[in-house]
Length: 73
Image 1: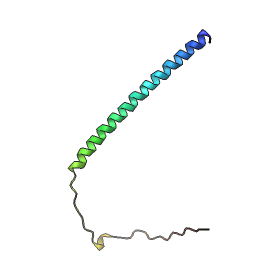
Image 2: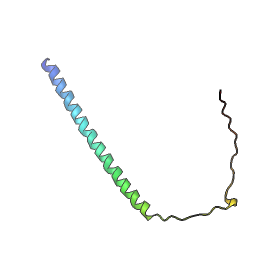
Image 3: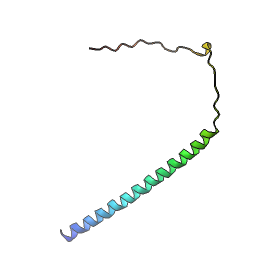
Image 4: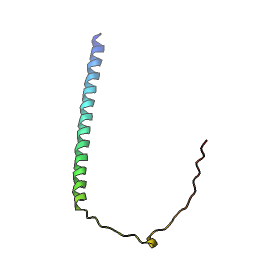
């Protein structure tokens, strides 16, 4: 391998390594942010209070009635 080709190879390898390091850093940032969001929403979910609502027949309306035909061979 010529000296010039070797230099290009080293430069390319350094670029790949740098890009991989950047990718790992971004992945870790994403994981940290997702963990933070999960913790925030878990705390909010614990604050929720479940209540039961009873439906009456006057609360239900049919907005659209459709017939679907699926032909089979």
